[in-house]
Length: 372
Image (tube, rainbow, N blue to C red):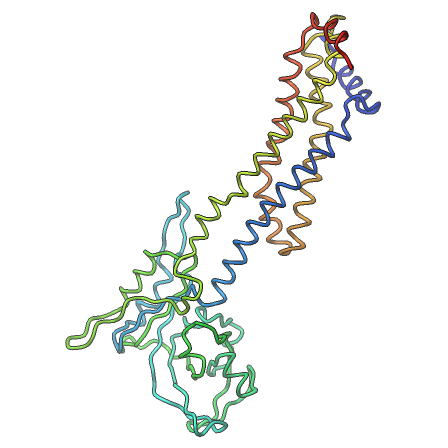
């Protein structure tokens, strides 16, 4: 049986002299591993872009309307609802919720001939509209980016109206696309919840799309005798469809299948590299060197090129992801690729073992005779 020092010494000599072909094997595996990882990254980044577009277009905002039929407290408490994912993780399917009620009209001094709708909103609507906590430190009204552009105003400015001067505490993004435009030219006043009053609408952010969570909006409506029932939920913007089902598309993405190429390629490269040395291996067996010693030596040699290749492919993947989407997302995207890359180290060893196990000392003269 070969001693550990002998195994290490033999493996080092084979690597240093180029017998192992470590550099060539590492280069080929690096190209394949990095190529398949980056290809999968493009598919994931495309889905992430679609998810961001879904959120920024207000497609994830759902609305239920009913004149004085919405309970503002129930609406606000929708964010406390919990759900369970397929892997057992607890989630909050409704990320933000707030109620609205119409308060008539308000006339701006700058637009005397065009009165605007005035809405009251529960504080929770700020999260639905993307208004941060720092934008609410000073009491005031909220206006859309469209109205701010028309009036040439910004956060912190004062707005003269027929009801007095109003301070603009927040300007929320609300573009002129297919989304609900009722808030585009309106004044929104944050108002504490009065449990004794019913409001007109409940807005909730649901991302990813979840039909069960959408149905929960119906629990905010209270039936009033003689009044038309509250309408069914609708999206603030249906331009991108009703349910992109990005989670399912992520799990079933076609580029994910290509990740198996890296472990398979590692197995094939290791198998080919070991078979290319079949005369040397058969000769060692013929001279009485134990097969276990040969396997151990070749395992170290295989690790010497698979580990650098996997590390290089990981670095290339991370660098590409960071260039495309930033550091935090790059770590997440690289982590997704790690199982396939780590598996390549194992399959390469299996390829080496498979090749050496099929070589016998009795084949030495046949190998020598058929050499090219």
